[in-house]
Length: 401
Image 1 (cartoon, rainbow, N blue to C red):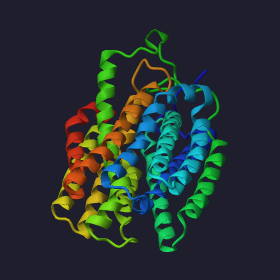
Image 2 (cartoon, helix red, strand yellow):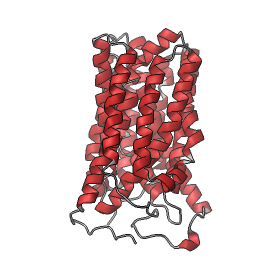
Image 3 (tube, rainbow, N blue to C red):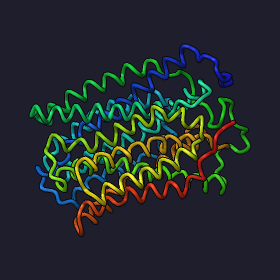
Image 4 (cartoon, one colour):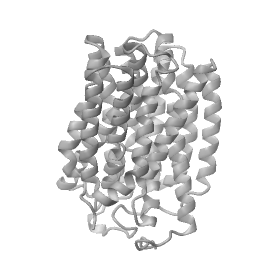
């Protein structure tokens, strides 16, 4: 038997508060693990002698892995439990990140990224499913706060990596240390996850009527597609920050090796700030208005930075893009998880799986355009994504009463 969500202003119980801390730790861990690799990707690219096209194809191996495993997430969540599954996936991801850093051949580099994608897709859905379960216990929006912790973890991971570069720490030693730290964090967090079975999707913890359970109507499928495109636009901006910002700063703008990671850190840092205030903005103005404002900020901020390429302007552009997409992925995930008539985790799993198409397509497109022209031209995909969000914002809900 499940309980109703608390009334507005009611204090959540102790188990819910502990679970919120556990989910926060899991999101932070997930953000920090790959972010420790990101600033060292140019170093790996140079050591393996990869062209921009081959580099982009290698990066695309991660979303390929994610697409293969992604649709299994809902079934695994129902069998293992979202909290436990997220912790197990985080530990295995720490091992995969070490493999990315130590790969001696291009094919092994791509294989390590592929493995990381297999693990990350399931881990991502599991931690979001558990976060949304905790949010229903709270009876108000807290999902953006979890994603803020992911962004904070990415900032922490990026700074840790920049520090390792400054100290000339070998890549294997660096990733082994960070892997142990964050794997232990995930193990401890799993002890405080919510117990019991997963609840049905919807606005409350009460199960949906069984007559519609498991059915995907044309209307729900259409909404899923719209939400997925919004999420893809947000992930394209994140992907550019993760895989191309450091390279762009270093190769196109001649930034120093220590300064080059600041493009990625600027994007993720401002995304963290946007997610910190995101829950209050969403509760006040609604997901739709927040998305429109964010899309415009992405288009104008990054568009201006690419039109006039300077290091300070580019850092501002990446920061504007990060703030603009701060709430997009949480908004799409929340809306997907609220779709009626679906089994636990199904809407979230499908939209997350479709979202990862952005991670697959964008590095291939950016790498090919970059080799044919220059990297600055290929990064126009960022302001285009901002415009796309504005056009599709109608799939998100207005302000709730």
